[in-house]
Amino acid sequence: MRTTKSITNRITITAIFIAVLVGIMFGAALYKVVVLKVSPPSALVHATDPVISTSHTIATRGNIIDSRGRILAASRIGHTLFADPSLVEDPEKLALELGQKLGISPAFIEEKIRSRPSSKYVVLEPLLDHNQVETARTLQLRPIGIQERLVREYPHGDVGGSLIGFVGAEHSGLAGFENRYDNQLSGESGKFVRQRDIKRKTIWVSPDQYHPTNNGEDIQLSIDVVIQNIASSRLLEAIHHCNAGGGRIVVANPSTGEILAMADILNPRDGWTQQPSDPNREINPRLGRNRCVTDPYEPGSTFKPFVWSAATELGLAEVDEVLQTPSDKPYRTTFGRSIRDAHYYGPSTWKKVLVKSMNSGMAIVAERFSHEQLQNTIRSFGFGERTLAGLGGETSGIITSPSNWNDYTQTSVSMGHEIAVTPLQMVQGFCAFARDGTVPQLQLTPAQDGDISIVRNAISPKTAALTRQILGEVMTEGTGKLARSDMYLLFGKSGTAQLPRSDGKGYFEERYISSFIAGAPIDSPAIVVLCVIDDPDKSIAHYGGTVAGPVVRDVIESSLQYLGVTPSTEFLVQASVE
Image (cartoon, rainbow, N blue to C red; front, side):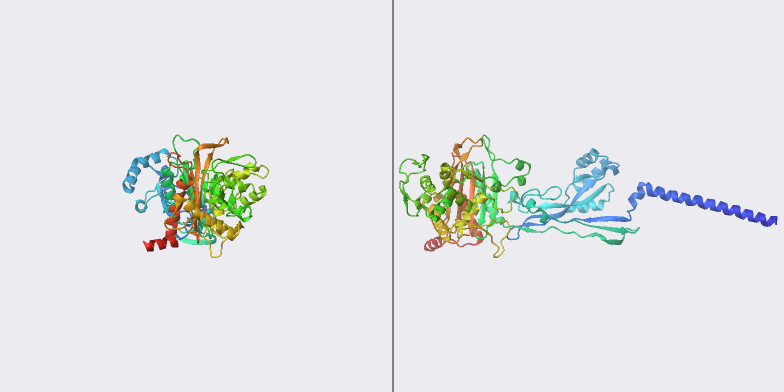
């Protein structure tokens, strides 16, 4: 009995001992698991990956392409080199190795790392080239990483830069078309969450946690990069030639309303007051406002064709009617205002008034309009309203309100004064003479077949054709002589308006806004071009026909040749005879 009991006790004690021992071992193992889970050694952290990992794929931004499919802006995947300074034990050694292998200044790398020792992310090189990327990947240095990023590139450089705009650090549009079409251009990056095994192989991807990459849409514009380059280059040349404060140019297809080119250039000059300026351009040239859209100007005599055509349409004057314009002194209106002409021709026909740009004749007929008729004329061509072409910041110009409109306003507006228009408005309205009297909707995207919007009917087809014919005579007998083309028959009008003072105290006597607008060919217009030169140096030249006219002619000639438009018949016959 004792022996059996003794054996039983020993077994019990042994079992308890083993149980306690197992419990201690299990507790120790559990403790170790907890320690490893809560505060694992750094070596273990870097040797293992989390069971669940998230991968991201970058969506590329859509391309901006011109009317013929040439890329104006595109995105690609680039690579940034970064470091985690908290993992760097010897900054000097690391900087030396990286500098030698990647061709980056070791001193620069070391300074970057030491400047933010507690940071987890410091950019060492924002954009690596292909060879640097391949080299960096072979180094396998723990504190160093490569991160993918989007890079926006503009293959044509500064051509159309202010129109195209640019993107910010987050690759979102900040100006120009980049901003205007940001929603369409921006893509949506992809993401998927996966489970890995100990060998880092993917064992499961949940369908609910997979989001595919959606790249941005491409945007095609009506802008033609070749015509844009022609217009920009010629405008810049003219600005420098006459030492102007700046200039603007717009090129459009009157048949479709498509804008083919648009440029806005500033030319800061020392010693000149009231300079056209744009602080944003000092930050980035692509960030500036587009003055073709935002800044109205007094059109001067380029506005006369609109009033002339309306008066003819309304029967207020006949083409061959002789008006009592003065021979040697200013004309005096019925309310006593003195109207001067650049040249006095004596009694002249209504047609001659437009060809010779006679202020007196315009004033005589302006008094035949009722105030409401002239106000309606302005509106019928689209002045006083935004063109809604699709560019941000567009203004509607400046027109005297009906309540403040008086006889003085009536005569001023007939000569293109006391009214301010944007270059876009001017081109849109002038398209009526290049068409059948209808005003097209200007647009920045290519017009599809039949996809042409008409804003309004300004004048009849007969009046439009008549006005175009007489504007053709302006080029041969009037103020457009210096802008005559030896290839195409142009129809156009010059304008030379005094520069208004910013303090509201009238105008400068010797400073001007010089402009010229024309279309061609006269028998089948394919293009309309407006050039505005801001404040040219009068000691060099200042008349619109002299300063802006040749720019318009050259842009029309080069653009029509590029578009494959056959020269006018008269010049073809002349060339065959010679």
